[in-house]
Length: 322
Image (cartoon, rainbow, N blue to C red):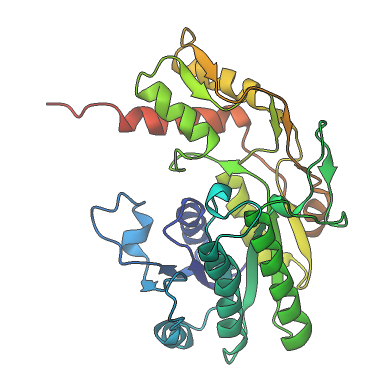
């Protein structure tokens, strides 16, 4: 894609940092949105210290978008990547959607779409959704394509589905060139230890024995975040507006096998304790559509993802030289 002016919401998040790095490497001009000012003590990637940032807090009940609108009119983005969200499912509610998740994930998306549609030259907009919009596959892992029915079970998936519908309506009503990326689980260095692989790596690095895991019998689709952000840029460049694209590995991975990859690297003798033993199956991505549309496929081996994540957590727990 030619050099583009790209605006990224959630720029200070796990995926946001890697997306900024990828877009910068491709020569794009960047503007990021963060919910609060970035300081030297924030522990965030270096790219955030060189990227122009505007404060835009989707949790702010006032819904004041004036500063962001001014920044966007001046910046004139040709691409918008909407990553900002409450993305830990446990924080979004179960039977009932948590009010903050509704505010950020749904109403925040509506605000972003209105801002984009109001620009003199509406940009291409990528809305990041989630595999959590799909129903449970039951006791066997199975692939889901974009044509399969959606049936989100919990608050996170429901807010993401609502955001999808808002985006598709903006395309039909306003002609805003919106694309939807249905992201399946992804991981890598710098991810919060509330997520599976970094949770384990942090325990290994801290010397915890046994390492506590939820279950070794979860079947999941797990990608490297660096592959995922590459998919996002390709979708903005070549994807068809109004379409939904799965972004995942297309492979069913057993959590216990991922754990063994990490244990071999970190400490083969370390014990493991399952907190919630039992079989659990998540949706697996059918990635035929994105491969055909933009030529994307995952390139980073799971072994490399595990190694890089382990090195990140090991370095954080290594005392500085005296």
